[in-house]
Image: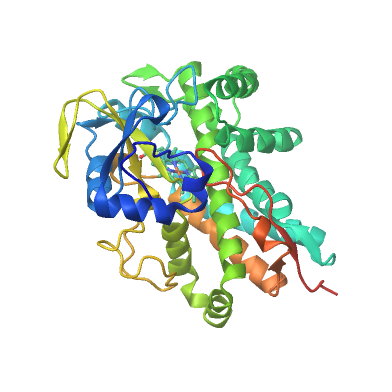
Length: 390
Ligand code: HEM
């Protein structure tokens, strides 16, 4: 493969579906690769370089956008698209969403909802795991966090899927507007009549000794919409695909349920549902002997880093009890994913319940599983067959 032609495309289906062939060559021969795509950018592929850049918010800024190509949002996503010191002010507003107490409160609800969803298809002998369990569950969790009324839940689920799959700035901007209008109405209603939801909490909070504005509340809602649902859904879809492809993984999970926690972590490393995000250099930066000029876009490939043999022994093998496992699937440094504990919980519950209720499920057509082009390595559909519950 020619990796010197500068045509690396972080969003191309080939990169998302078969990343190892491309990334291993880049790590070995050209770990800091310039690409002409998306207006020109640099791709970092080695663990050491990717991790260092992710942590270095001074030289690698999250402004003006971390999406590559840009999804065309009218305002930055916060807290993702902010740098210290502003970042920590925004991030602390979110503590309430991700507190250990809040997650413990949600655990019972998530389990109950997973069981109800599986109840609907367990006797049928066939289902689409993505459509019937994964997307409804992951988007329901976000609606709980945001306080979306029950009647709007399915609309919300359609939006969140479309949001991570947009391929042009125009399509992204149109979708953003639709979601935005909905949230604007919700936030205005909470300003009039506060409830116990997140919007009401944010509107009653302060930042730099002034009240949080409706616009900032809106920005946070838009960020959580994109960040929380489809990422976890992508992880789940990949996990169930891998368990089908590797019968030994299924037997290990069934024989040793105590490895579920490390197993989820290892699946996240192997899959890396969010394959990377971009930064912009604030000055000329030398990385592995290559000087990246100021003002350049840099793609940090967490997906490639998580398969770097310099950081992980036998990276191509899924080792369910791998320890240590310092993967970058949730990023690193100040922007490290605050939703990680929640995502882990959702994934553990889904794997646990599926293997308990439909332990012999198989993909109906393994060759048809495709990863869609987008910010996240999304699998949209996962038809399965299994022995029906009596
Ligand atoms: C398996 C599922 C998930 C994956 C793989 C994932 C991945 C990531 C990554 C890689 C980042 C770092 C972005 C950067 O450095 O620019 C991030 C940030 C973030 N994630 Fe997640 N995420 C997941 C689930 C969630 C969930 C469930 C939520 C919320 C409910 C969430 C909310 C956020 C937020 C708000 C940020 C921005 C943090 C900041 O900028 O300080 N994520 N996520």
